[in-house]
Image 1 (spheres, one colour):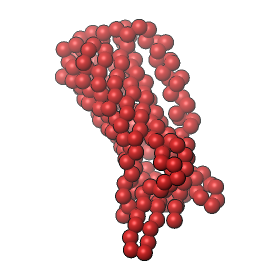
Image 2 (cartoon, one colour):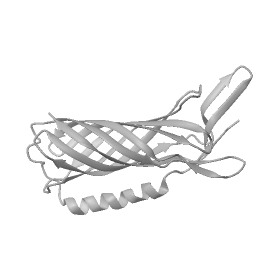
Image 3 (cartoon, one colour):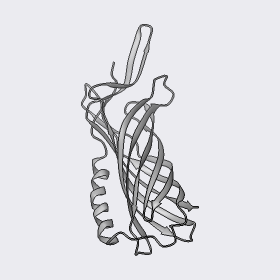
Image 4 (cartoon, rainbow, N blue to C red):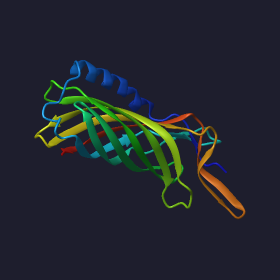
Length: 217
């Protein structure tokens, strides 16, 4: 039997992203070269944050329940192919739970995308986006994990302290493509089959705030 149905998630947090991106655009003005970065095309960022969102619906009762907001961790690897423009590979992971269903869930994102920086300020604004995959898995339950396509968009600030070291802060929103009414985290065995979760909408949304340090070399 299907234990939980999934629907649109995190609307309040995701809704703040357009306003953040607009504010960054107004602050940044026109794109320009970030001084001193042309000779440091590679970067690595270590990130720690907080992710929220992920609403579910309990079938039969119609009761809705959200994933607990929890700490997230990540790493981003960048390659600046021209001044102010870079490719970026991002991996973030969160260990959370859905108390109403008694399920502990891990949600991880792996995205490849681009990053556009805007110079002319002490704090360098940037826009970022990526596409890739979301991995959803349950802890302590013998079920297969689910891999689904997803995308993300972010706006942030970087504060260069030296030529090789900077502080980074950003807000990022994620959208994971659902599977209609397909079940996920399912188990099938002799005489028994069940699914812990099921998609009931088209997308799963989450939002995240991240902070960390960037090393350029």
